Length: 172
Image: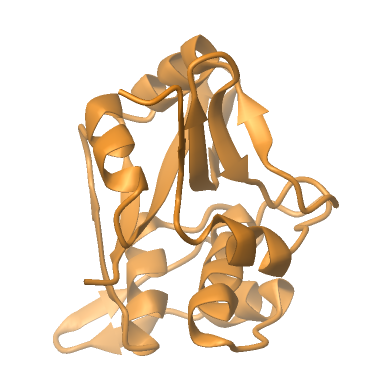
């Protein structure tokens, strides 16, 4: 396998990357970044976060997409992508092999990492993998528009803690 893999959307995802500041709105800011990159929109992350805090009816289901002033739920991200015409899903127990295989395809991969002590979670858009630097992300926690590298072992531990939860947009 190659020593470095890049998403075909790396450039535009980094260009459209928004910083969430001190908020806990990584899911909304990541969703806004992806929507703006893929669809040429100008969605502002904090406005999307506010919108997502309002539950919505989806058929017979009252869907809570985001806990106010806190976590964005994976099905909330899926719902926002679906509203904008994108095919999205989320699932548990994905694998690093899958991330490497899917990274260069026409997919947007957003693993959710975190820990239980202290409890925290964070979602970022995966844009690269490198044998030496680890996993590369468009990370809404930072002001810069560069790849944010996370050591492979650290990523593996943090992703495993969140049951290898993955939100994915399929552009095929």
